[in-house]
Length: 312
Image 1 (spheres, rainbow, N blue to C red):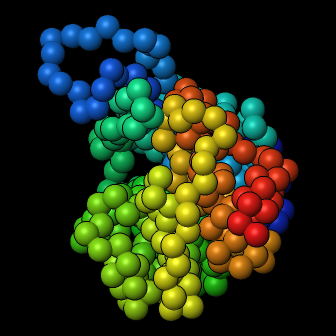
Image 2 (image 1 turned 180 degrees about the horizontal axis):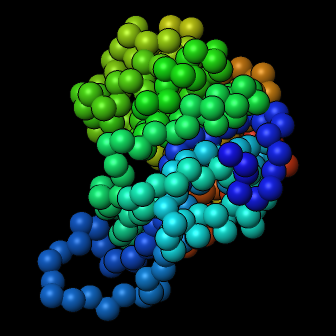
């Protein structure tokens, strides 16, 4: 299978697996949204390509890393939007045909940037799989693989382990109990998770390390920063002030993961990787819901230097 934008399968820094799709953005006056027969909303309703794998791919690419994105896409309007996004950004994309269609969701976005996401669970098929030859070829051409928790990525984890490639994953708002997430948590070297639904984030982080192969675990907590577990030690990572007003938190976790991975692949210590992630995540919160912009490497490094100088 060839890349949809003509890129050749040379070496990549990161293969992003899964998480391609389209969000329909609906701005609402408040969250939770009280029941009413109707609402008049502004700005209007807009659909754009950009789910977790797309956001990570764009963020990594904007940071100067060589990225390839692999996922299942339908022969539909949503698939065309995903393909157009990658073509415009010159991000290599391999799309495996999805009979059920391209993943899609509706995001309700409040005035403070918080969101409620409604995912269409009808688009996947239990039989969906990535072609083994395609997955092996791309994994062998990549320094690292970032795996989304979208179907059918769980089925790819044993093959990635056979290939010996390092893996990261984002469990998003896992509650620490849902068994679906366990395979991802146990078979990744770097695990990101939101602390939102965790009763005891540190205990969950330690269990991930004890039961799997993870060397680094990060639990993000929005404005409260993040917790980093590295070398059996938990460190609190302060949040970074956004450079502009917060308008949408969607994609902040994906940007954090991308910034962290930039530092990791550049050989930075875990705490500095966390600062990279915090800067990238803070920037993402200032990007409107209908856009997929991300911070560039020069801007990120300048922001990191500014934070470090203030703390010196």
